[in-house]
Image 1 (cartoon, one colour):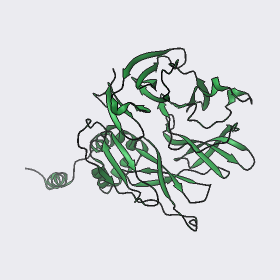
Image 2 (spheres, rainbow, N blue to C red):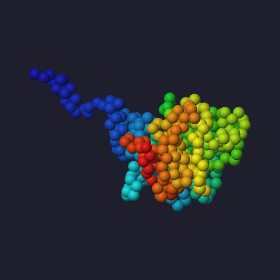
Image 3 (tube, one colour):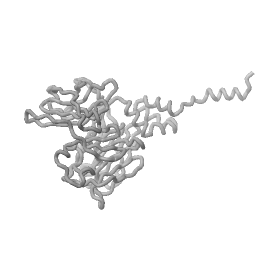
Image 4 (tube, rainbow, N blue to C red):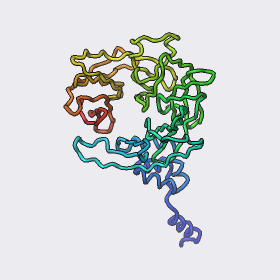
Length: 363
């Protein structure tokens, strides 16, 4: 005959929910849509801790279907974010989804007149980097938004009155989300700084004196690959890097690709692949992307595209021509390329110009 304490224990076991360890809970939560993840934060402290961690946000972003994010900003816009499925077929009707964003309140006095608002300038690991535009004020603020958890974090400020973000990335050894920027300090002059969101600090790397007047180059145009950030030389602020030894680099150097190692925090320049000679008077456009885990460059010229890949990142003579295609009429003015790296779609590259986008199978 069953004793009374045993009966009570069985009754308590039936009334208590089964225990799920953190690893199993994480795998389940990763498979939920964004709205469900947001609601799950209120279930218990353990789920709140899991779903608000930087590692979970990044992993959840990698699992979600790829979408284009459109941000409308300006005096006459609502500042809303809209998304479009990235793998929609050309000519297929696409449904937009609006993300309701509650922007941070101003902690400093607003400018007396004119437009002040937020502009999205980069995205990485499911996080969005915004620049706040105070009208008539040169000193701007930057914020990172987690659209799943609907949380905001201010990018730590650097000394000085000017801060130009150059890259937004994750520092793999620490898991910190960081922003690389060029700043002008009151005493140190122009410098490179690394701003960490998790550590809430801005750390100076070293001097970066300008050799031509600086211009605002936002949004960010860089490729993150294997712990390195890459820019076309024309897209990176015109500064003297350590390898210049204080001398102004010539056209051969400034035309190279700039690479920043996020672990050693050192810069180098990588020679580009050979460029074609133009047959017509049309302009050339270059765009960096990654293909098959390698750095790649698309060369748009005379209505065609050449796709080059860097076989060995440490040998800038290892560029290989992967494919050359003649572009269809709607994309004769293409100026950028990207590989969404979606599972099962590795052979697809998204091309676009300043007025539209389209798909081309290249491999």
